[in-house]
Image 1 (cartoon, rainbow, N blue to C red):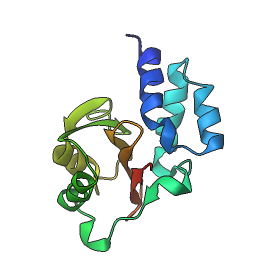
Image 2 (cartoon, rainbow, N blue to C red; image 1 turned 90 degrees about the horizontal axis):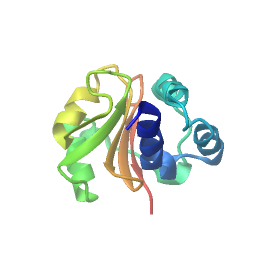
Image 3 (cartoon, rainbow, N blue to C red; image 1 turned 135 degrees about the vertical axis):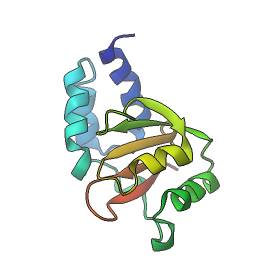
Length: 136
């Protein structure tokens, strides 16, 4: 599978979380790796999620273990997939808690996919720039 085919598959994982303008923009770019690079560049301050999928995280749960517990209560499996600015974990499947430990509070931005198109987590730049992503 080529990287652009990988990006097309990755796009399908996050598409249900995206608002219409971002969905259209990135859908047009799925045929090339340039579209993925654009998403990665925007991750730090990403504003393309549908308001209806954003779930705030209580202040007591802003730790990797706390976020993992919330995600598990929502049905997250033990493994997840990362799209991240940190190349060491980008495009990797990792254990849920391990993945969260790699991104929460580390200064990297990421979208963690727990259940494709249904449940995820976003970590942006800055303090507490994070949220659960959940459809339905």
